[in-house]
Length: 106
Image 1 (cartoon, rainbow, N blue to C red):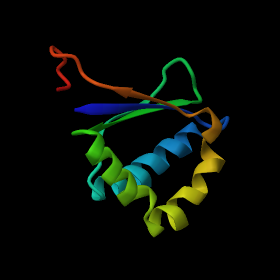
Image 2 (cartoon, rainbow, N blue to C red):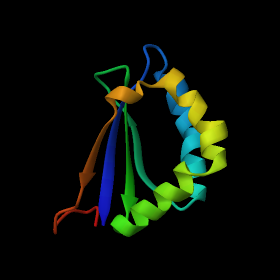
Image 3 (spheres, rainbow, N blue to C red):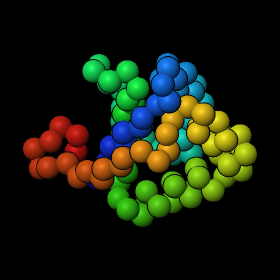
């Protein structure tokens, strides 16, 4: 089991719009391709920060799901073009996390 912990910096004043886009378009699309979204969060202390987590069984599943999502015409032609107006893609931080033996996220 592995998780991706993803931290995004939304464009100033765009976080609510980004959250709506994530929850109405991006997350449902990714789930339809087999992704497991473990959480979606806004930062209480930073009005421009958004965090989300995805769960994968292993690296092979992660690679297969990345292909299914990011190489699809729907992603490239319809979903991805709007992203740069809502978040700063240059500041995205991705951490790959593996739960410890006693983690409830096994």
